[in-house]
Amino acid sequence: MKKQFFSFLMVLALVVVAGTAMAQTSVTPYAGAKYNYTIGGIDAGSTTRLVKIYYTTDAAPGTKIAAESATSITVSNVVCTPSATPSVTFATPDETFVLPIGTTSFSFDAAFGATVALAQSRIWVEIYNDAAGTECHNTMYLNVTPVANTLDFRILASNATQCPTTTTPTSQQTDAVNNTTEIVYTITRIDGNNNYDWSFNLGMAPGTFGPATETVTVAYSVGAGSIVSGSGFGAEIKIRGTNTVTATITVANNPGVADQDFVGTLSSMTQYVNQTTVVNSNSDLTTANNTATTTLKEIPSIGTFSGN
Image 1 (cartoon, rainbow, N blue to C red):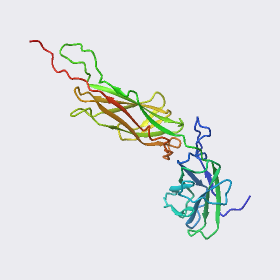
Image 2: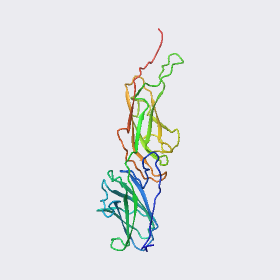
Image 3: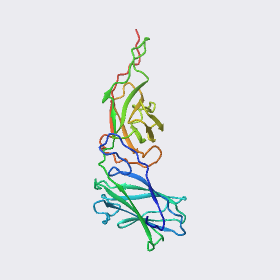
Image 4: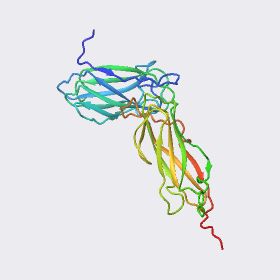
């Protein structure tokens, strides 16, 4: 076994995505997505240490591909143990940062470019025994094989148009229009994995059906899995154990108001890596299906019915 100036161990949480030709994990990442990696087992040392991270293909391991490009990786969010968050500097072709004295492990995010080679490649880490990068250093790499991104988030309206909800009157001089109408949208994650949590924000416009009516509200439901957290519009709704969510919008009816389009819009779609690590791979495949519209139709008002 080779002697080492210090040792470190790459530790990865590997998870499997069902339904893809090659499972999407930290070592088979989506092109255009971001993942988290951890280096552990570093001796504490007595000096600050320069770290270089760079990317190569497996076929040409001696040729660095410049970081922060569409064909390489971009490093961010370095977190050290004991607690520290060094800043990352792009020093072509490497990403570099300095570990504080006493660091025994660190994690970092690596965002893969949209056009990285879909072939086995390597993330390299070099740790120098000084902050300038002139002293002895140790090196390790991890094989990664980027795969084509097929992750997609969609919203679909149950009805393109619908009339306000009515009920046959059961007493005279009462019209048929209910107080509220429900509009239903289905939100779906395509090529996701039930082992990965995911989340989204839902916006709705307009906020009322005509003037001087109550603001629309929303309730979320799932047939399986669970809603981990979140409620309402414009907040993160976090989902676990299912790829489909129903959003039921309640609108206060307003007879006599002209047709109104109610547009639901998805934003901030995130697929977590496992259930707790807030690292997303939200390179949404198609943004055209991030909105859906239901037109609530005008219904005549009837105010009175009396005899002479």
